[in-house]
Image (cartoon, rainbow, N blue to C red; front, top):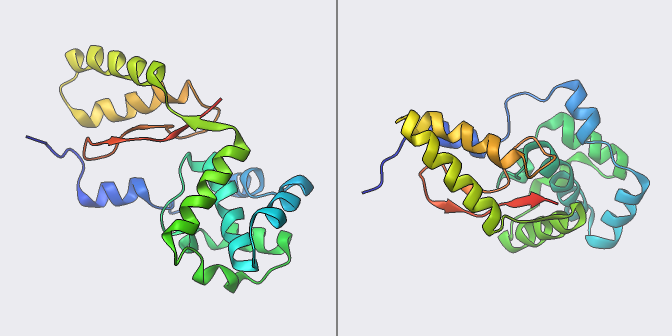
Length: 177
């Protein structure tokens, strides 16, 4: 029997855009280089798709995942990218109407960033670590952030690269490396 250890609100918060985006994060993660702009131009047709792809390109290193609702990205981030790409902010509104577009773009972004799926070594390391910690703590809410820390060892990025989702189901992510 599966036990839930996060409320629906906590799950939504973990899967969504953060409430705040600091100025330093905005500059660090949402500044495109000329090589990024050239890649975006080659990789996506249409201004809306180009802007959506740019949001994903900048979000994956920032959060370690991309929320499903790409058009709901922080306005400051979208505006910054739109200005750099010379497209209108409103172009993002229809992005991702086809789930396949978002998925294909995420695959392209992960490939560009050099991310890969978590492998057997990472999963075994995580499993062993969590099993040992489970002997010390019986609260899954304590184990979840500890597991995130283990996965960060495999990534230069601030969020997890693959783990169980908030309901404890296996979820595959990407690791940098």
